[in-house]
Image (cartoon, rainbow, N blue to C red; front, top):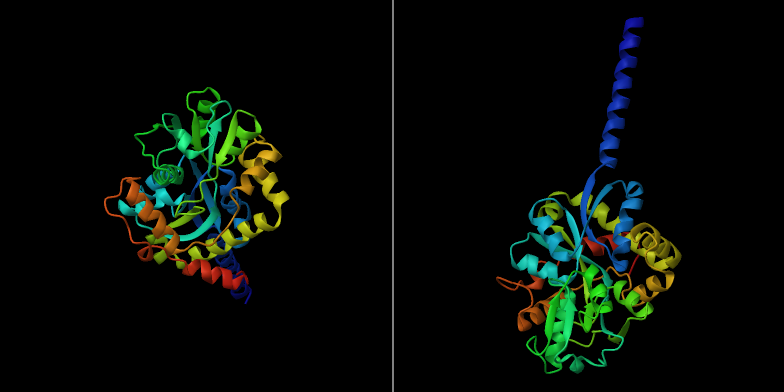
Length: 323
């Protein structure tokens, strides 16, 4: 009898251990996330902080620019990536197996001129050196602004630099102006060596929406995990939208290690507010603008309705009573 009790107890203990292991494995489902280091990408970074309570683990890898995120996806290293729409569109055009599943910020661009450059409008860029990062939405916006002001890339000298190097080039007067992201453009203005010429939102693109993409494999084959991740993204984004102090503290202290000021942060987010919605129409207009000006190397411009999939987003919004 004692032997039977001992055997039963041992089996019960094994069952509890197995259940615990199973729960732990479920809690440790990993989403591999590619992200960039900008103020308006902060809510996406925050997902990893709240991921455990969402029942997942997020492994974030930070890249210098959007096309690098696409390379990570093509290499099979990422499940989800965040980037400007230009990099996503170019990636899809050239075979990246991705879907746009959400937006996460809008705006985030500014044409900034050197303090003593005399540049006050886009037309004043003629004959000047203009810095921009290749492969970002800023390059598309610069081409569109030049085009609608009667200029081409032949009328200005385009200097391609990494986002991190543009401010230094403007400060050192190696360029006359730059189409820059946030918070770097706000920093240039607040430090006094740059002046705002314009926010480039008067093109057909309007305010560019930053894109969250998922690999087709992740979207189709790991649906329950993709659903958890999307809800976690919305929770992180809603937290940053509703609690600006939490957003500011996290972005300034955790992401930028106190290298930007409160003023830099609030100016940056004022020009690149957090968001989550995106439409196929917006992606199509951006694609058409890229094709018109030859921005990005697209083997064949993709049709937005074929790869913008917002069903996960709408499902998550409904479950959280978000409009």
